[in-house]
Length: 116
Image (cartoon, rainbow, N blue to C red):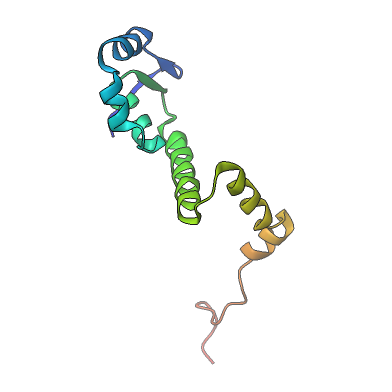
C-alpha cells in the first residue's frame, strides 16, 4: 500500500478538512460504514492525509496484523469487544506457561551427531 513518511506521525489537517467537507457525505458514509478498520487506515494512508514516521512502517504493519487477527477472531466467534476481552483472558496462558511452550522439544535426531 502507498504511504508517505514524515519526521513524525502526522495528519495533513488541510487535506483532512477538505475530505470531510467536500467528499464525506451520507452516500459515502453508507457505502463505507461496514468496512473494517484496515480499509480506513489504507484510505487515509493512500490519500496522503496520514503520514507515518520515517522507518516505522514495519512497526505499524505489525500492529495492523494484530488488529486484523483480533478483528477476525471476534467476527468468527461473533463476540463484542467486551466479550472478546473476556474470551482472551479466559483462554490466555501465563508467562511461565508461554516460556515452557517455546522451549524446544527433545530433538528426534541430531544432524551433527557422529554416525555410529
